[in-house]
Image (cartoon, rainbow, N blue to C red; front, side, top):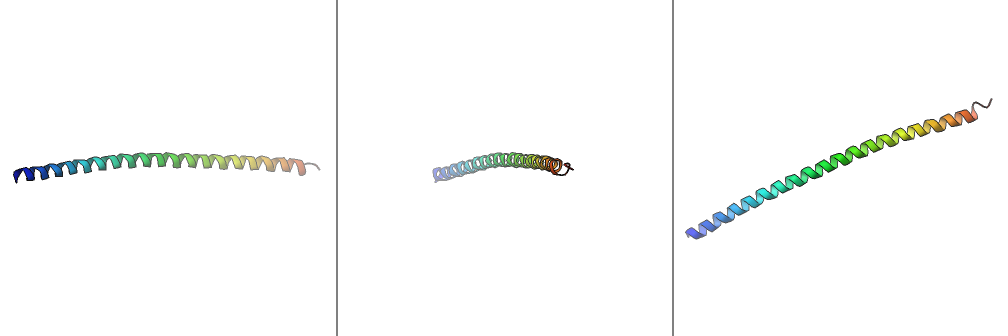
Length: 74
């Protein structure tokens, strides 16, 4: 009986350690995923802002060329 109780205690201890290690590993993975998501979101936001600024600049350039071509002929 004593050896059975010791084996059960040992199994409980092993399960507890395994659960703690699994939780720590899951936390590390989640932190890594969150970090990557944040960097990706930031990068996409910066890229979107850059593309909008580029489009705005190109639109202004096209309008200026059209204005110079058609309105200043007079």
